[in-house]
Amino acid sequence: MVPLSWYLLLSAFLFASGVAGFLIRRNIITIFMSIELMLNGVNLAFIAFATVRHSLNGNVFVFFVMVVAAAEAAVGLAIIIAVYRTRETLNVDRVNLLKL
Amino acid sequence: MMPVATTFFFYFLSIIAVVSAIVVITRKSPVHSALALITTLLSLAGLYLMLYAPFVAAVQIVLYAGGIMVLFLFVIMLVNLEKAQLEERFNKQWQVALIAVLTLGALLIFIFEKGRSVFPQTVTNFPENTNTQVIGLLLYRDYLMPFELASLLLLVAIVGAVVMAKKRV
Image (cartoon, each protein chain N blue to C red):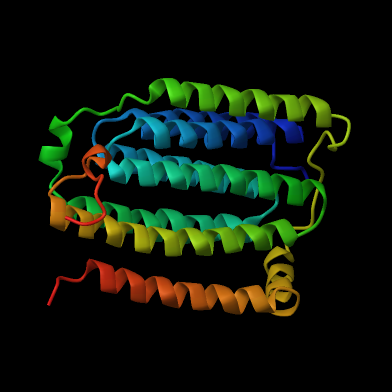
């Protein structure tokens, strides 16, 4: 059987790669995908702990995290479209003014 | 019944997840990143199945790989990528990123080492045939208030997305 710490290490790796992608990338869509990576790393840790502790509360938490991720993706992608429409760029370094 | 959560499957799925996570943050084209992210999400769904959580695995495939990623690809189609690809891929914050990732990794490994005696070592067998039923009972009984708030959040997100993405009139 697989020890719990391996799942936790994998979830830590996913979270860390999400953080790295968030900090180093310039394309706003890829930055958004890095956020999804971080959320998934946290979800894996939730499920691993829920299974080990024989409690389904962790699964319910993951369900809520997914709901929030869906809402966040819808609003964030709408913001991306609005930004692209006004600025013609996806580079976050060029998006440094709130009002044009 | 023999447990399906063998070590081989864990290695297989986690190697896929790790490699495609690295591909997500390094590829130049957002389309390649999105496809790699779908691979990560599907392998995570497999890991959820190994952890006796079939409901979350199904929701992961339907919601993430089916819903959110389609939204991503749709937005990628809407924007002009050729101009974005000419620009530099990474910004100059890689030192900050390296420090952040190393600190985070050191912290997490420290916690694992400290908590090794607290956490149970193995993932034991767990009833999965009633998984969805019990989650449904939890959602509608113990977590009814957060459930309704989540529906309100989704409504706000729908309205907000439409308002922000529509053309100015």
